[in-house]
Image 1 (cartoon, rainbow, N blue to C red):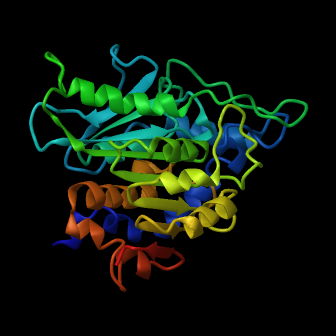
Image 2 (spheres, rainbow, N blue to C red; image 1 turned 90 degrees about the horizontal axis):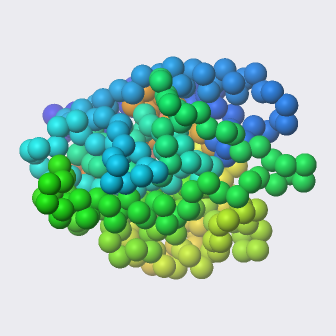
Length: 332
């Protein structure tokens, strides 16, 4: 019965299908916000169309989730349980978009899944993906010199989600008044957004961090305009951190694995599954990556011992999944 309560267990049997779909979804360059080819990319266009056609599911958690916006937090997309009037206190997760794009729905299936487990999840940007999206994002294509445009969102935009959620928890008339536990605040992000997550992780209100398919570039080589990150940032981590990489084919593999080697002062885990840079973000309910993310958050923020078993012990759940690897520091 205990295993049945852990989200990741539901995904293990479907791992092979999940991995295939993830690797076949959006090309690597699309995850970074720009197709590799300068001309039309038929595979990319088809993959984008397929993802946009996927409905917004309520997630598999106990609290069916919705994607919405709020006039009190312009320029952001909010994922939360549909019913927030009662129930246990909600956690908060702020998110950095892949490519640091202004598409707050770019990881909507992943974020809806997390929200369904009792979280208010906030991503910067507008709804530019999914059925009936009122706006479609302009892809970040390189210029003639091969340079991408400056980032469309910043770590300050990500951190604004924390400010808003905690303010709403106190504001008279807010639907979230008294519903959020300020001790349950985390940050995560994908690719360029993973670097934003590391920048935000220095905030003392943050209690857990997840870095997806990302890592700090070797000092002096950061090619992302509008973002300054160095390896020194890792020394400012004050919470446990989880890195999730897509194996050697993940463009972030060298940087992410190097980050993990350098982290020695806080508990850390590095999980790898061979699905490349795209993870499983574009599969129903966010696939296996969303499931292990929920377990990390539940363990770190709510001290859930059942969720911890995905990461702890010689026979941890992630330790025994074929083709997956996990490395740990300060965990056991």
